Amino acid sequence: QSALTQPASVSGSPGQSITISCTGTSSDVGGYNYVSWYQQHPGKAPKLMIFDVSNRPSGVSTRFSGSKSGNTASLTISGLQAEDEADYYCSSYTSSSTYVFGTGTKVTVL
Amino acid sequence: EVQLVESGGGLVKPGESLRLSCAASAFIFSSHTMNWVRQAPGKGLEWVSSISSTSTYIYYADSVKGRFTISRDNAKNSLYLQMNSLTAEDTAIYYCAREYSSRARFDFWGQGTLVTVSS
Image (cartoon, rainbow over all chains, first blue to last red; front, side):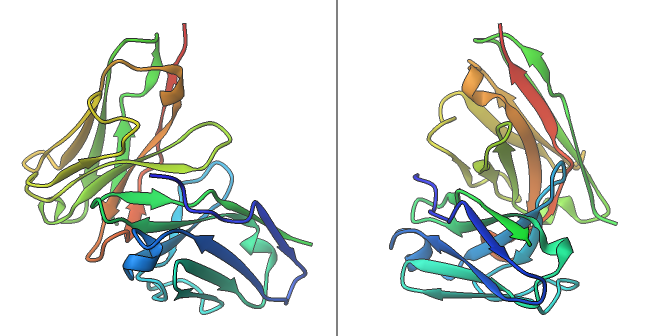
């Protein structure tokens, strides 16, 4: 159950778009359309931003979008805003009926 | 409003045990798979365990298998995590999370309870 691989940090200026990658294997990301993304602000619980690769829960901004190609999933934040500065984690269902999270990405708004 | 409130965390010595609880409210607890997820200080999220709505299916991360036991009481709207043989590597904030409709869709999380394992 190795953690999914994410870049440690990604930054962008307000209004720009950024993309965070999440690389796994055919036993997790590549094998199922059960990839979720979570946003976590310091000292807070994680918040679901994307589920089933590309679906947004009610109330989540349309600036957040998800996609997947092969063993790599991606989260794109468009029109970057100061409030988007946080840690982001991907998660995937696995062939062992367990879950695995990504290593986490710190997003900085310049 | 959906609420998940964890309790039971604290300071324990290596080798000791601890039982965490998660009290759920404002939703039909018995209809949902529930999960425990932990986060070591300054580190990332780690999935720990899941239990299906009727306790039929239970899964654990390799790191806790054989030491931790997840359970639930649907009559009390409560989720539990019995943790035995604790080590320093188990030091973390433990969150309970509701799984909604789809796998890996953890839509509500508690505020977490801190477990510290230290001599």
